[in-house]
Amino acid sequence: AAAEAVAAAEAVACGGGSSLWTGDDGLVSCRYASATHVGGSGHDAAKENQDATFVASCGGGTLVWGVLDGHGPENGRIASWAGAAALKEYFLGNVAALEEEPEEAMTSAFKAAHDGIGAALRAKYGPGNSAEDGYLLGADGEPIDGGTTATVAALVRGHVLVVANVGDSDALLGGFLPDGAIGFEQLSTDHTPTSPEEVARLDEAMAAARCVYDTGCEEEEPIDVFRRGAGGEWELDPDSLARVDEIGLGFKTVREDRPTTMMLMPSETGFPQQSLAVTRALGDHFFQQHGATWEPSVASLDLFDVAGQLEQVVLLLGSDGLWDVWDYTDVLDFAISAVSDAQTEAAVARSVGGVVEATRERSQEYFGEAADNIAAILVSFDITPTSSGRRSTR
Image: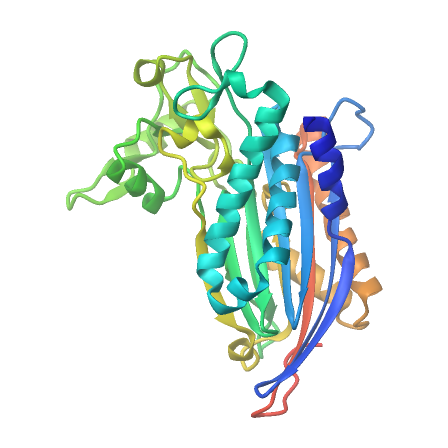
């Protein structure tokens, strides 16, 4: 049943398309395309692509794009595809709610996706394996899990961009500043153990999870990322930083982010030690009992407010397999330059395909066949506010 759910969900995969909206405030048109790759050379038949994308064309100038990055060796693909299918179904069935109360609708959509993943896992393992708290237990009596990050961007009423996310799949809105430099805004929120806001949330919830550096050594005492500052605030622990330097812990990204994890200790849960690289996710039902949450962060902006600040505006959504090997300005420059001369769906498709291929080459150089899956959606906007009649992006 789970295999059938994945196969059916693949029908929601995002291809390419375009949209044109006109209203009292002006005109917004966009062209979009997606691309994905399993990572590495692509020739490892045993390697699974757990990334998923979707698009929901809701009519009336409302479009929704999403990127999901599954995790868990047994259930990551089920989680990402079931989540994508549930998100698309929700948005297509609740267009009025999305247009009238977009932030509330985003939260409801993420809850529907979280529940959809639970249903897909129960279909695979059987409802009889559920523990009292709702997570599943395997034949060995240990928790069965699997989940996914999700970053979803909705273009509402033609010109309002609403972004919701859990985990570390990013969304950037960027373009050229008047001086020719790249300007951008990160529309997604960091939900990893390196976020002081997330460790404060976990502390307030009295969660059992610890935010620690991922040293890959279970025998070593976990190294906490944060400590309490003099004023009670959470701050990076300098002693921990010195310790990870001493043991030679490298960086996870080219932006020099350290690998970290949310760790559950056996003394707290009664189960063997478990780890999760993000603090919010869809699925991961066992971790949801110990501090993780499916509830997204939501942000919004009006594209007409961007029109006077940036030229050639693009929206780029991607899994961490994309973002880990790029500086933000470099990948935006790559994407924008590839569509600047030809505003067609084909040009956008070539651009996002080029971004994914360049990412694959970088990742393979760094990580070989262990390189992460890659998924990206690129949206190129053309914004013309009525007040000025000035075209901000081609």
